[in-house]
Image (cartoon, rainbow, N blue to C red; front, side):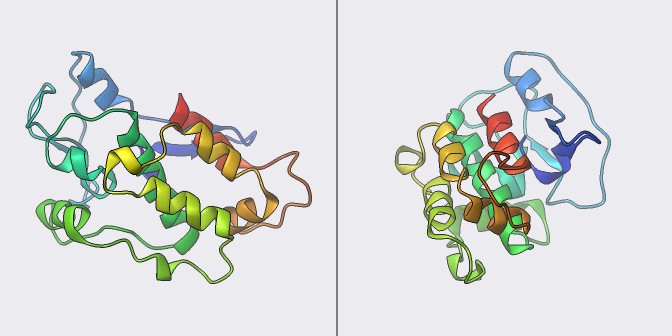
Length: 183
């Protein structure tokens, strides 16, 4: 359930992904969580288990195949990573709606507005986002390691975190986020 609310930076600068509730659901464990005030950010669970036709995830960050209740693989996480990265660069939600249903409809039908990216966004980041946000999972990145490589350039880090980086030695927490998605 990769989303901004589940990504935290520790005081020492490490990045942690929290809330593996969906991962537990996939292996058969159940978990309950309290409600929040934002219906499009609530986990969307239509069943306690997973199978074709069942939807698990957070509406604004689920992949189109996930929103349709189709089988998913690691490329659904690559989509979610793309959504989070897009939101980091633009400072606004990629898919939003008044209700969970509206948000799922946006995920399924609304074109990604790449023109919303700042003009200064490096070509590598634009290409990465386009590959992560491919609606057809077969056209999406095959592995999140490709994202890490694309984000190693200082210009890419600056576009995402808003801080100039002199050398690629310490690419920042963006790469750590990519590594977490890989894990």
